[in-house]
Length: 152
Image (cartoon, helix red, strand yellow):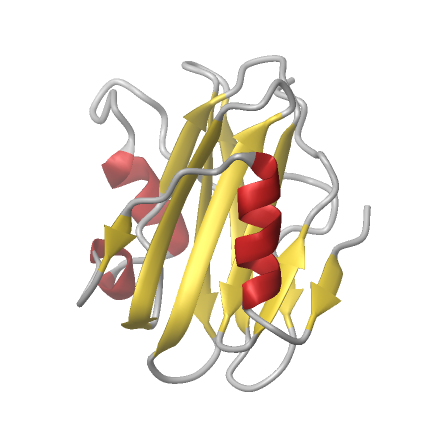
């Protein structure tokens, strides 16, 4: 599985619109900035305390890299108990524009945006037995993954 990259953040916006993604606009510091991506996903889980902790990225080349300066790392986790995928983007440098979106193969979207920060809030989506696609941006660069982690 490969990720495609492009030089402009508007590409993610265009892709997000094409995918029918609706956004939740966030600004300022995020909980993910002071935690590892795994901790941020575990703490954001709707069944926190009941669900197993997210411990590693899914197989297939995750985390993905968003090249450039500052660039970033796109993490995708899956927990099997409740069937949730979780995606987080972490900047490779200082504060920058960041966004991450995740959608299921059947079209259910979730996304989060940080106008200036070092990490996004985690985006969780229930997708047991369903493939997911991740879109992400860091600064002026973006990526769209192939459908992956088909919830097994």
